[in-house]
Amino acid sequence: MNYWLMKSEPDECSIDDLVQAPGQTVPWIGVRNYQARNFMRDSMRVGDGVLFYHSSCPQPGIAGFASVASHAYPDESQFDSKSPYFDAKARREEPRWLHVDVKLVKKTRLLSLAEMKADVGLSSMRTLQPGNRLSITPVTPAEWKRIEKLLNV
Image (cartoon, rainbow, N blue to C red; front, side, top):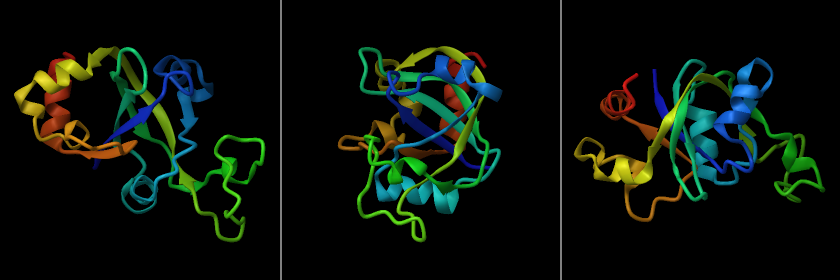
């Protein structure tokens, strides 16, 4: 089993949106970074753990736990010229962008970015490293356990 931190802007898709979604599952659309896409395509497996992270908002941080609920498949928004995620170079026969479905496991209190940065047990966490802007990053089993402890899960 692998673990991931997946960032979403709450005005795009929040943990509350996930709670209210049919089957408490959402497609993780709009990823337009090749490394993040490759994580979904090559490394994510159904059942992997996900830290649902709110980003680009007044209170960034982990808002809950989820799991990968599908294998990677083409992100239809790349073909929709009205979508902010449209990619004119994408072709149906060779899609450039993929996504997975994510299913809610548990909504938690917000574990803020400041709390994460202050915790020595998370000091090497990839998403906390200077210059890291990836929307999807791997999380080690030790980091996952530390976050569970911080959130009393």
